[in-house]
Image (tube, rainbow, N blue to C red; front, side, top):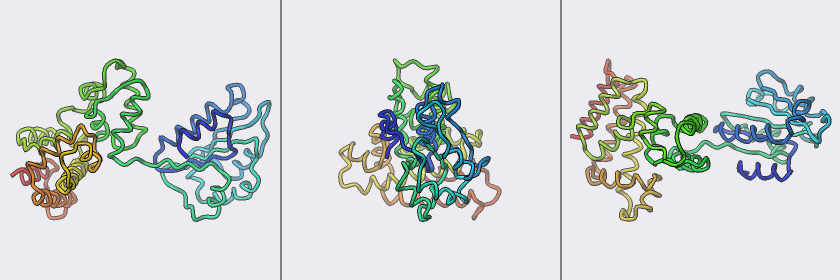
Length: 334
């Protein structure tokens, strides 16, 4: 079930006695858990009928005892167990309760950062009586479009490059991204799109000196611009870790290899779909494809992997991150 499906059912009054929310993407788990916490009971009912527990500070016996209790001056009670993954070793103790759920209780488990071992009998039994929701982490190529849709849902617009900057700087953890977007919503108007300038001014990500611009400069064979960016990275290594730059360069040239393998490179939408990028960026791959033939791209991927090994001390000693990046850039562009 999706977040929207579950929330829609709750709005209709179809509230279940057991919800097991799990997975590697905390944002979706928190979204559902918070909705249940704030909407199943009225504010007056929560005082006596809503209990928040934490896995590290609780035990399964205490949770079951609370779940079996009856509501006071309300139709139901809500028990939310946060950080339930800390109870992983004792989860089998809930099996007897699964045989006879308390219909006037809504018990919610937030099992974060990982998936449970579904081979265990407790989770097999739970899947038959509970609403099971997996918060799946998004692949990196899906996050920019998620940012665009989330921003739109809040009445704002964001430019593709600005969305890409957020992903490269913050990674794919949606909670971090939402936190930064909410800060932008406070200071920006809905009448104008969120631009790279706005990202730079309010979040501190350079619009000119970042991994996206480095890839673009390399793709364009703009030696001067590429060197300016890596010099900036050398001066700000904590904000621009080499491991991230190498990973993103590897992704770029891997996609460029895929671009060369396409039978139809004239349809921008088809290219965007094949490479899993926003159509806005297809032109960058077209230019890079002209500058770097397929055989050279394969060689460059090897150079990037070699640089990655050197960064870990294999085949190179006492080389700074800046020197490694400068060496790599020279070998790619000459």
